[in-house]
Image (cartoon, rainbow, N blue to C red; front, side, top):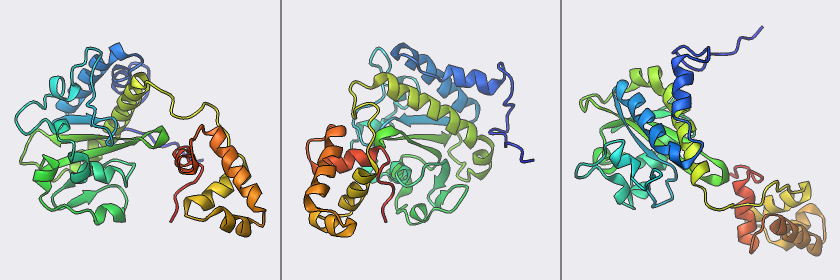
Length: 271
């Protein structure tokens, strides 16, 4: 009989255990919960010797805020000193190796100027440019939690040690990374849900097998004529399937049809 692995090193059973209690505290069900949930995440980080910094969308310039519009990374997480207000630098997500690495990894990892280290090998992280790491990352070392959300949105949460002399995070990573990941994913997912202002894709959108097949070929650059030859179908049939998929996805053109289908995971990862 195969035993189910326990997710955390801390006690994980019982309604009143610390893990479940913390999970409830960082859960956001309405906008008014954001501040208290952020305080709970901050306290969890501090008691383990770390400072937390959170971003719900590394492609967005908008900082995370509470119900009153206060920037939580500043007012609650304490990133207020000169040079620490990283959300004010709109270039950081493109220049810093930390959010960039979160595009290539979905599980927690830790990093310093010597490399990025997870629980298994990731060639993308191994090839990441870490030149001027401290200047570009605004830290000397960090535990990173990438958060890959629906519709292609990527969040990023970092935990930097309060002890600035501590650069080898292998031990705290093994001890705390699973808990950090579970709590930050709960926090970010709740934040995104309550702050979402518009629907990106129609609900319950289901593409047919033929529509997906056509879009997969279109996504790698094949024309309708080429797809018709590959699938042995008429040119008009291929155009119909792609057009029909666009109607289902509420897309304005072929490019957006492919983009939205990719966001829903219909196209998979192309080589």
